Amino acid sequence: MMKCKILKVLLIEDNPDNATLIHEELNDACGNTMELVVEVKLLSGLKCIASGNIDIVLLDLSLPDSKGYNTFIRTRAFAPQLPIIVLSGNSDKSLAVKMIRAGAQDFLVKGQLDIEVLVRSMHYAVERQKAMNGLQSMLLIDRVTGLHNRRGLLIHAEQQIILSKREKRKFFVLLVDINNTKLINDTEGDLSLLETANILRKTIREPDIVGRIDSGDTYRSP
Image 1 (tube, helix red, strand yellow):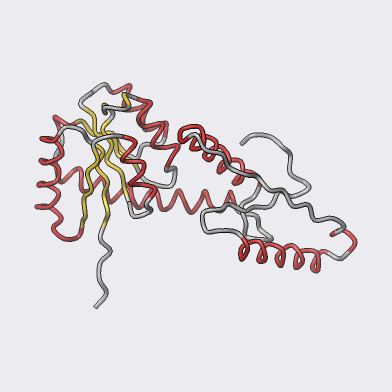
Image 2: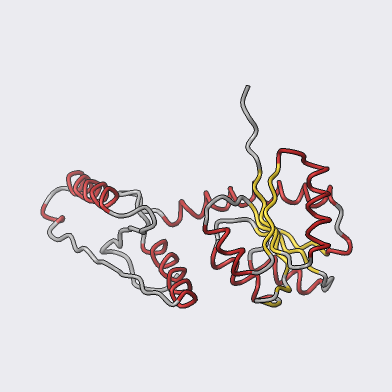
């Protein structure tokens, strides 16, 4: 019998009463099909996301180390691949629209929170994000090598710049130029690029990012 995947949920919420209530209601509604982790600050929440074991984020906007719209933007920039549901005490509809346009999967008001609505929203959010990630991957992958294309590299570079500034650390960029591929036919040229890509995959560390900038690409920000 196939085991159901446990949904790993990160709740970033500094109010202990709200966190306890959500934890108890999710536990009653979902039982052992859901695992909830609670962090009280944005920074500790981002560190939890970096562990790679989170499926969805429930995000309060008012935290000790971050307030309002900026809280969502920082989280979204750090983890664009994760679905984020905003939980807010603010019922302002214009704020909700702003969050959805910025990439939030849903915007729920705490005082009006219904656990069945929350659970349904979470499952829908995970599936929508999977579909979006799949489409995004198709747009960011080089067709010949399977590496990131120019757009994919620039997006990852922007994320690394944000992280390096926040954590006050450096990162390195290595450029490798492959010349004279036009001297062989298209098939052999593609094979040479693919073989180079395979060598690079085996050489880099797991956290490193590797991609291909095709000679026909234009050097503009996405």
